[in-house]
Image 1 (cartoon, rainbow, N blue to C red):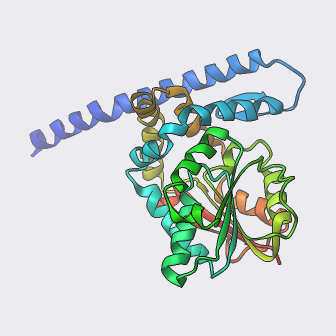
Image 2 (cartoon, rainbow, N blue to C red; image 1 turned 180 degrees about the vertical axis):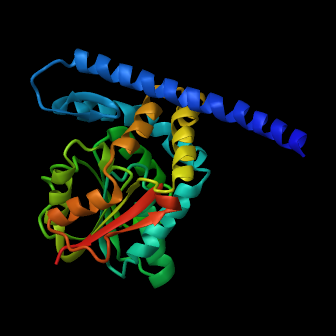
Length: 300
């Protein structure tokens, strides 16, 4: 019996120990790169994080823009590969939790390639047989917006003028009137914004009284075993996938770092509440052990 157990332990160590060493090595390199960024942007400007790096606030938007310009053409493909398609289940549940009624007016911020807006229209058509619902897909990145436009150009939604596209900044929706939308959504986009509090206040402003704010974003995993495996996968595998599929390891390194930097579910729920929204229960629903979460608040 002893001789049967020891080989198993040895095999486990051969697999587990290199993973830990690689994770530690990656963490060291990331902190070293962070110091290099701090030296590069050694100014008196207020600082914020760009992944694990510290950069001036007025630089982050440009850096994030470069990331999404680089990944726009492979964005949907990489999401499918990285999540094994699970992101589609999250988004489908997000839409069903939203449960929009006939004639709903949606503002989808950081709408990117259009997954949420498309799911919104499909739900209204399938559940209510409704073609009066309207959506504005807003994104700060022109290349991401172009991918969304191309996708909708192959559907009837564009022909019926149900969808509109707008280039804009979530932190300052200057072109959007106050009290003008029923639902505001932002999916996997708010963590890339420099001032999350400003995004939330703008969301509150543009919603009608009784309107709903909904955010789908990555969260913090509480289960220690799942958390360890998830972190190893995020830092050791996803950047390599980014290099192999999109020829861009740096952008996907930033994306996994940005997930780590985003507030925990309870802290983000408090930020939503501080922006004026009324939250129900704890304000969020964990998905897949908390890898992602749906946050919701009402303008009452």
